Image (cartoon, rainbow, N blue to C red; front, side, top):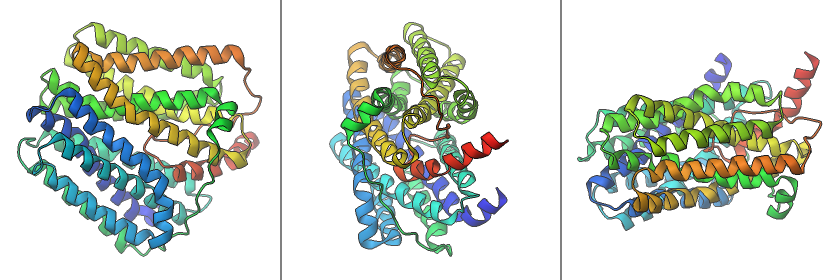
Length: 415
C-alpha cells in the first residue's frame, strides 16, 4: 500500500479534493434551492440534470481524450467546473441551475474517466487492486468530508459555493504537476443491450433500479431534509451516514457473496432495504434513528451495485466482462436520470415521506424480480469473484478491476 501511495498520491489527493467539491455542491443545491422557494419538482429536475450530463460524458469521454489528450481535457473541464460552481448563487433560477448541472455532470464524468485511466496506468499488475481500492476509498472519504464542510457553512451566502470552486481548482494542481506520464487510452467495445439482457436479465433490470435508488438517495436527500426542517448540520450528517454505511458494509457483503448464491444476497439486501424504507415512510423517527436508516440505506445500495456486476460476470467469459460491465454502467446511469424526477413528483404528491416511499418501492421491485429469476435459472458453477465498486466509477475503472479477477481467483484456489 505504501508503494501505491508513493506512486499515486497526486492523483488520489486530487480525486479527494474533487469529491469534496462535488459533495458540497450536490447537497448545498437542495438546501439553497429550498430557501429560494424552488418547488420540489423543480429541484428534482435540477438534481436529475447532473445524471443526464454524467451519462453523456461517459459516452463522449474516450473521443475527447483521444483528440486533445488527458492534460487538456483535465484543464478545460476543471476550469468549466470551477466557473459553474461560482455562477450558482448569481443565477438563482432553477432552469439555469439545471443547465449548469448538466455541465457539471458531464465534466465530472469525463474527469473521472481521465483520472482512472491515469491511475490504472501508474499501477502494476501487483498493485492495481490496491490502487483501485484506495481510489474508491478516497472518493467516499471526500464526500464524507464535504458534509462536514457543509455543516459549518452558511448556505445563504456565497462562501459555500466559492470554497468548492477553489477546491476543484486546487485538485488539478497535484495531478497536472506530477511527473506521471499520460496513459494511452483504450476504449472498451460495447456489448449490445439485447445480448446483455439475454445473458443476465437480473443484472440489467437490477442496474436500472439501483440507478434510480442511488440518484434519489444522493440527489434528493438534502431536499427531503430541508422539507422536514432539519438543520444544515443534520442534513450533512444524514448524507455522510449513507456514505459511511457504504464504506463499512462493502467488504463484509463482498466476502459473503463469494460463498453463497449472489441472488439470495440480492433478495435479502433488497428486502431489508424495502423494510427499512417502509418503517421510515410510516413513522416519524427521531433523528438518531434517521441516521441508522441512512447507514443501512448506504450500506445496502453500494454493495448491491457491485453484486449485480459480479452476478452478471458469473455468466460470462473473462473476455466479455469489461464490455458487459460498460453496458451495465450505462443502464445504471440511465436509471439514475429518472430517480430524482419521480421522487420529486412523489414528494409533491404525498409530502416528504415520498422520498423513502419511492426508494422502498424500487427495493421491493428488485427483491421480487430477483426471487422470480431464482425460480427461472440455476446458479452457474463457477464464480467470477466480487470486487468493491462505487456507482460513480466509470467503465474504465470497472474494466481494470475485472482484469485482476482471473489472477485473484487463481490465488484464492491455490491458497
